[in-house]
Image (tube, rainbow, N blue to C red):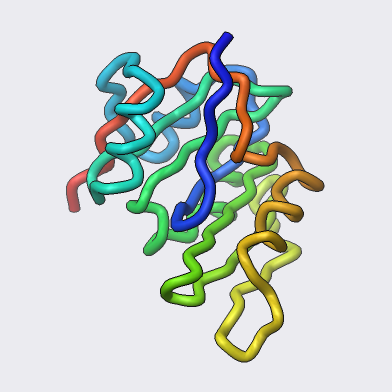
Length: 151
């Protein structure tokens, strides 16, 4: 099993799920198939129309990519899938540091930092690790690339 991960300048969801298919369907993603880990991470990081989707990791499916910076789908996706959904974003260049958690559609634990807050990307990763999975070192068995919905 390969260990891979992503870090700063990324936005992602952690969805409590044992199967990535319902997660992709809930977000309106089109699965483009398995992809090499490095190529998938590069596409998710450098494009606005592709995200990576992991297989289950300790009971969580992660969806990551730049597309999620403008989205806040935690509550809606949580209600749709009747599960817990967490949203994280960190980008030190734009001073974006965010997290939120929704369970069965109820949004809680919301933080959307501003330049005046004493929060940085390490706080975002610590929150992710405490709630679900730290994305910086992931045991990746399968990694899918998916196309985001076209508006």
